[in-house]
Image 1 (cartoon, rainbow, N blue to C red):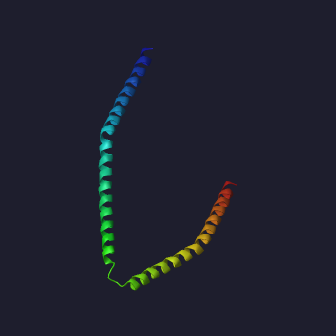
Image 2: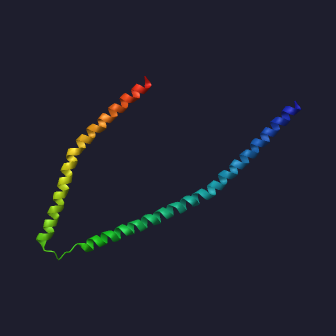
Image 3: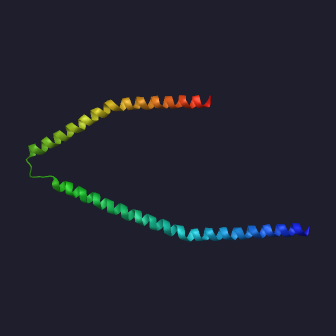
Length: 120
């Protein structure tokens, strides 16, 4: 009986030691991970702010490129050209979307049939 108690005692002490080590790892992570996360978020926010500033500078440059001294008919002509391009692209999309949707539906059907072939 005594060797059994001794073996059981060793297992209990081993598990207790393992538990202490895991508790220590958890405590360390509880102290370090929030700071790491905070630093990561701060870096991401700083990077996003700098990107936003770059975009804002680009927009300011684009606004400065607009020549308000152009006669109104010239600006009106540019706006009409841009709208014509947008209308063309919209028509192309209007024609291609149904085709792409049909292709997607056929892909789903074929995928389903291939899966059924694999299972049989």
